Image (cartoon, rainbow, N blue to C red; front, side, top):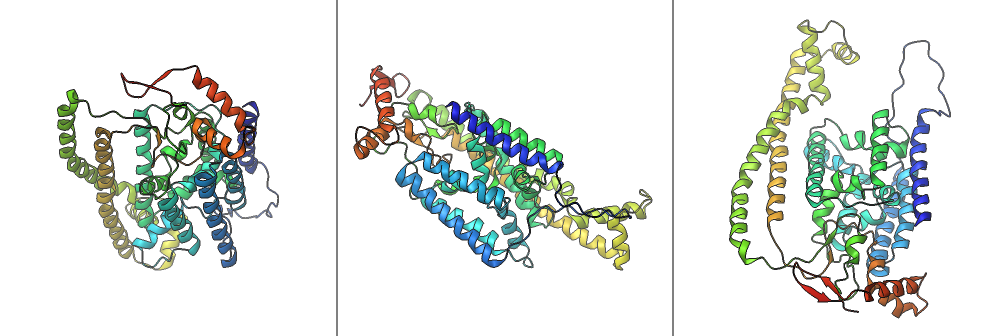
Length: 465
């Protein structure tokens, strides 16, 4: 345990130092210009040729296949950790976080709503391939392929449990982030995921001070809260959560039957273990049905309220578009509210375009933002209402299971399951595999000191040795 803590701290310091060094080291300083010329800031690595894009796609597919095999067949957490380290080194520091499946959401949105934009082949592959893998194997992409998840998983030191009410509340932020990213990218306004993603800034060593502070804060929070970005902010994770509900194969905590030992409940730092749920109590059944009926009536109201709010936010979000911002600046200069000209306004006046034409283009863009605002707010209202309805439902469950949506397939729970140790003991003999036999003996002796375990409130069941 101490060695693991030390390695996690060293990795965190390495990532932090890698970022901070970008502010103090410039290997090849450019010549000094006598004019007031300001160098542009490059926010992305240089584009790669088609052959190298194909290599990236092959590495992605190979890592996805290997991650699925290690989790579902080998059931090996150490092997998954090794794959995490490789993915962090390749997709993170070597490829500098580009192209990534998370940022590809914006490319896809822009290509759908703007026929003139052709989505890059690499963005298309990195967006679709993990989704297809999720439909078959669950969130194996999150387990060992995504470099953002890897840097958080490897630096988790002392995980603490997040209360369920806070978990559900914070998770709503990811839906807001997803909807806003799609809205702005579809309008051609901004790629906010790439612009504000703290881990991309760390990988590229070009983040501004605000993003360095945010990235450092997430790293520190990640020492104690398991994968805070993945659980509460990642917009791609929102899509993977829903697709993983439909996955053909999924992570199973125990290879055979569940003996209700509850050890896996404490092993998962991501709150992804579904505990047994008893039958609906007869005393509260009618009241719970009334609450569900009220929520069903409330759902269209929440959708309408969200759509109205999104429509009213449209004028504010439209200002993020360069054309709208330029039109407002020209209007301020023409009306005397601004006396100095900007580079953008000077370039516009030199272009020969009339001010009326600029205003017409800006008005059309504002109208598009208003239409998008209805969908933006309506989607968030629908998600909020849907979450309230799902939380009010009660589905009977008798065993401890990994939640299809929340489980990131990290494999931490395997070594805590006595049935898993029995399987390893059968395969590798009494000596075990990498000390698993001794761990099995320790767990068995721990369980033997207890006689009962609480399955449902008020119910007791014997341990199944």
